[in-house]
Image (cartoon, rainbow, N blue to C red; front, side, top):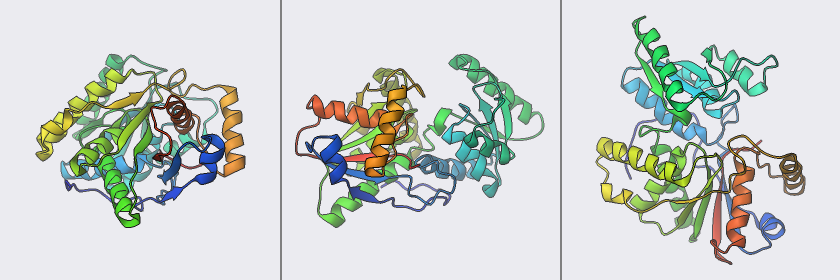
Length: 319
């Protein structure tokens, strides 16, 4: 397995549990359901799986002499929360480009960003990608004029530098299988910016595992967007590490059970989330995990996930 430097924020591996009751009541007992609990990583601010990428981002930034990390996100972005909170511990300064106006009432997650002493720029809601990049470049120029060396971080910290975070998950799953003499048929996870999904898929191919990795899109991007992004970042990662590029040829398995777009959900979703939480003690947030779980149910119903198979669901965060 490829080796890369990272800082140590989370406690890994995260646990895997069998969820028979959840499978029986919510999935009609049609599959054997397991959960990998990424929220149980000792992360003190509850951003869950994003820590996987941040650890590698910080290590790469320090190694390459960057001090300021310019990253964009929505008002309650887990990525912005994680980078702004942990950056000072590693001699780094977070520069947050928030895709919204400054709110009159500050949500708790955003308050963590403010409390971190990050530099924050509010640029208005939903800027076009080209406009967003232009703004980030202008902010970078501002810091360069002061003698700083800023790193522009892609949305969600999804870059060739952070792909190893997903590869680590692959290795942990493989270690679990070896220890328990078990074998998963499917690994299912939500896909936002795609970084963890890309790393997990690359790791699966390196280890020659037979699972099907099913990405459930929770944003309004189309599958071809992620396939293009996978090739782009995969090629950069291969150039950086010497990875065999033929491992990138196999197509990705993506499914569009995303609802109406990123962060958009219905009141009835919140009611069902609370029901599941009350009955099973399992919280599926409405932005990522509930959409993913709905997608999983649909795939089972459509028999794209075969009956009586072993399914591992990556739970990206716990409440």
